Length: 470
Image 1 (tube, rainbow, N blue to C red):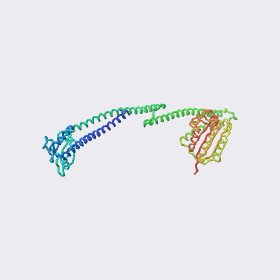
Image 2 (tube, rainbow, N blue to C red; image 1 turned 135 degrees about the vertical axis):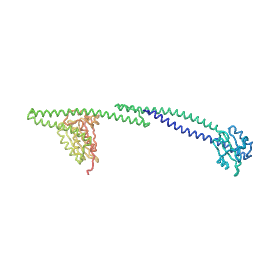
Image 3 (cartoon, rainbow, N blue to C red; image 1 turned 180 degrees about the vertical axis):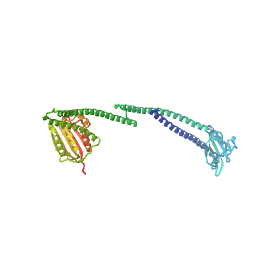
Image 4 (cartoon, rainbow, N blue to C red; image 1 turned 180 degrees about the horizontal axis):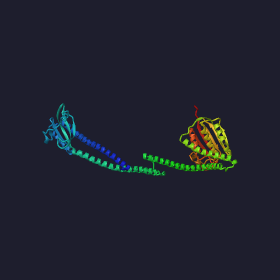
């Protein structure tokens, strides 16, 4: 059975308030009742002391004085009783010679001259509050007086207070119910809004947004929910982009593989059927070899990325001179650069060294340099190397067509290819090269950055940390 949060909250509020008011009401009622009885007893004791004081001055059994006081106290329903040393009533006269039934403890207190009171007592007639004031002279008890006041007046006062208290509690509960219902409804709506938004996100709607605030935890939860939805939306968009690039990549790979495979297949069929002249066979075999290497580069590029991504690549760090790396890269790409009308320039600041995996460092610099040659025509490719206190810095700068500002952050993504690169080229770049480069640099605990200006060229800067060789 579903019990709405709004009703749970409302019930808890009203339940707590009701219990609290019941406890407070009982305590206050008991306190007021005790206070009223105490005030009545103090009032009787005050009257009694005044009467005893005057009787001691005149005569303990002066009936005229007692009658005078009784006439005054009649308006307050207070009755004066007088008893002798044996506890026998002397006043009022109609009750004379009646012995009062004092308990042993009470009689001991009277004998000691102690004033005491009883909140509710009926030994002298109707239930009343009584006070007893003994006459003691030296060690002798001469008698005493008793003042009684019916408790009905006191109880009426307490009952009237309890009625007011009950009405106050009832009004407070009604007001509390209205406020609790209003607040519970607000919180219930906010939670329902989050529930509906969550259901919408579960169905794939990432454009949903709930009202948030810093006022309370629900507002903070709503704020975190909005951030989560934004992140999910970005992730979903990235997944869609990645899928599109993946499809394009597969199409590009299929296209690039089909061409060399068709060429190789044609050459093999030509050789088998003696359709290629003897003078052209060497050229055909060389072409088949080039196309085979092209396919191998494509496969290796994919394998490299997967190995790096799954942490299967183990680096063999050693001390390497940057000049040696640049020399190898220059030798391998010099012919390629000349075909594009480019010149490779090496600039070294001293004799910088780097701690890296030799093969992977060559792969990093070769890959970036190939990209530079690919997008540069009749220009320069500059390889720079220098050393700081903490890093070895390698720069590959070209004077080519540059990268569009919108594409700079995307070039590291897998399968990404800028529009300018969607051309047939002999290098096997299918949108994986720079992703591999970035991963390899990170494996070396380094950093790679790119600066580019459209139409003026691009500069890649690699920072590899220096460390002492053990």
